[in-house]
Image 1 (tube, one colour):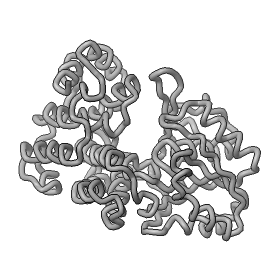
Image 2 (cartoon, helix red, strand yellow):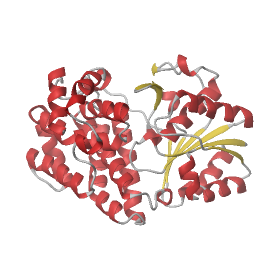
Image 3 (cartoon, one colour):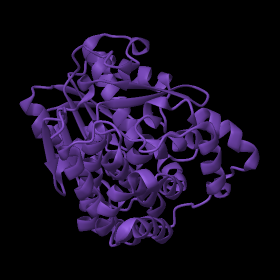
Length: 376
C-alpha cells in the first residue's frame, strides 16, 4: 500500500436543478453580497437567470462579472477582483467552463487574502485566506470545480499556474440543467479532455494511489458510456448528469495523481495556435497512447473493459473510434498546423517538465517531434 495524500473540496451537490440551491448554501455562510463570475456568452443564453433569481430570493445581493474570456489574461483576473471590491463581495460564485471557474478561484483568493497575483504563481505560494467559494461547471471537461489549480495567460503563448489548497472551493455544484443544449463540438472536446484526465491519472508515474485509481476508473466508465449520447442529444439530462459526474471524478483523480505527456504536448498546440484545450488533447491522445504502450500496457489493458474493449490494442482502438464517433478533429493539419510548426511545438513541449515527469515513458525532444509528426 503506497503512502499518499488525497485532497478534494469538502462539499459536493449533484443533481438536475442543484444550482438553484446555491443561494441557500451561501445564505448559510452569511455571504450577503456575492460576486458571480461567468462569461458573456453563457449569460446571454439565459441559463443563469434561474440561478440568479434563486440567489435573490435567498436575500443575496449579486453582482455579475461576465467579462471572462477563454484562457483568461491577467487583466481579466484583476478586473474581476476590482468588481468584487466595488460591490463589497463576501463570497464568490463561479459558473461556466474552466476559465470562469479559474477566474472565480483567483478572485475569491485575492479578495480574501489581499495578496498580489504576481506573488502567488507556482505551487504552494497562495497561503492566505479566501472568500467563501462555490463553483458550478457548465461543461463536463476541466474538472476545475474540484481542483486547486488556476491557469492565467501572462503573455503571448505564455501561461502560469497557481496551485494551492487555498483554491479548493467550499462547494462544487453539478447541475445538468446548466449544460443542456451545449453544442456537440464543445461536448465532444470537453468530454475527451475529461477522459484524458482519467487515463493519465490512472497511468501517472507519480502519486498514483488507490483513491485516484478508483475515481479514474469510474470517471472513464461514465464518460465513455455517455459521451456519444450527450453529443447526439444535447437535451438528455441523464447523459449530461453522468458526463458532469465523470468529469468531476476525473478532476479529483488528476488533482491527486497528475497528468502527463498528452497534456504536455497539447499545451503548445493550444497556446501557440489557439486550439481549444479539449481538441488539443484529442489530437495528441492516440499517438501518446501508442508511444506509452510498452510502459503502460498492463494499465491500459485494465482500462479496456471500461470503454468496451479488450487488451492494450483494443483499448487504443476503442479510444480512436470514440474520437471518430464524436467528430473531434483528428489531425493537426485540420487545425492549421503543418510540418514547419513541429520544431516550435516540440521545443515548447519540452518546457512542460511539470507534466512530462509524470509520463510512464520518458519523452525527449526527438520523441516530441515524432509524436507531432504522427499527429499531422
